[in-house]
Length: 154
Image (cartoon, rainbow, N blue to C red; front, side, top):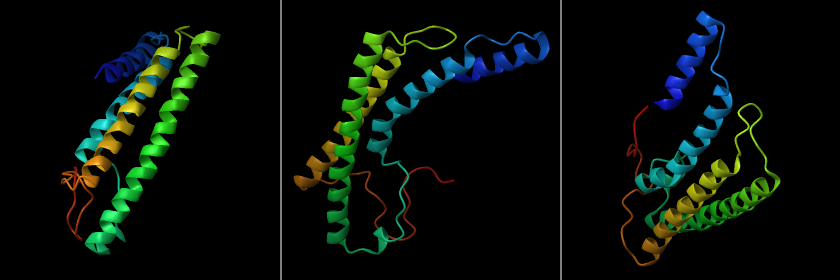
C-alpha cells in the first residue's frame, strides 16, 4: 500500500503541480525487492509458486515423489547459492558505499534483506525435503491429479 500511495502521489505531483516526488522510482524498486524476497518462503510454505504440471499429474505416485525430491534438492541448491551470492554482494556494496542515484541511500540494507529472504526460502524448501525424507505429509504439494489446483484461481 505504501508503494501504491507513493506512486499515486508521484503521478498527482507530476501531472497537477509539475513536481514529482523525488526518488519514487528508486524507492519503489528497492521496496519491491524487499516485498518479493520476503514473500518467497511464505509462498513456498503455501505451495503457491507457479507450476507447470502437464506431465506431472500423469506420473505415478512414486515418480511424483521422486520428482518432488529432485525438484526440492535442485531448488534448495540454487536458492542457497543465490542467498550466498546476495550475502557476498551485501558485503561488496557496504564496503564500496554504493548508493542509489537520486536519494543517495546505501543499497546494502536492501540487498541484505534480499539475502535473508533467499536464505529463509532455501530453508523452507529444505524443510519440505526433510519432511518428505521422514515420510511426513507435505500439505502444499503440487496437484496430484488433473483438475486439482492449489493456490488462487486466475
